[in-house]
Length: 323
Image (cartoon, rainbow, N blue to C red):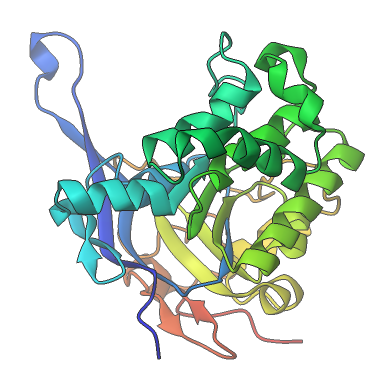
């Protein structure tokens, strides 16, 4: 069996918060990620879902090597991202691409689309200078846009067009992995469907590994084969998409699904109780204060992510029973 393309081993990311004034100089610690374990095989398509503040974007930043883990290890193949030398980091930058949530804002407004797509090709020296123009045309056509758009600027394109250009730019360096942050948010439903179809086809044709942050369970079910549900910096359930959406085992996952009858609404669990502060987490299960089936043990014992059924992992002392 091949080694995972990405491995996260008990990864933590902690930030120090300092108050204002001389009376509040003692830093407090906020755990954005706390003991995350995750493996990605080549060709996997994984959706990261959860309410705002669950740690999804922080997790992506660590996987991109933009921030170091405070504890634990992030491995790309067999190598720790924190220990990559200059040559390995350059190869990593080519093999792992990122699609920004704000596609238009991620592009230089003074550069034409042709130059934006040529930039990663030229940076990584993927072909001779004379062949770059033809390669750029092939890229724009691969994402379903006409070559005539190459001489336009980002501000002249529609929302759907600029998202396709962002995908083309991610593909320009021939990556093995694409990480994407809410890359279809804010689009009309028909345009969103077109972009999702494009991403799904590209992943299937090229065997690209995809990690996709989304608040939309409809997007997750359509695009990704696996789902990881995050809550306050931890993965509380992960496994095959169909199994998780049809028979959630964690009470938080079930609450998300019950509060999400339509696939065009933001993800927000409808539960009583307050979300604990990540600066002052409670003893025991951090979901216990909102869980409708919490028991006394839940307020004392912090559950760990353990194997459940059919490739599923759940962090709950009393998982939801199947119906």
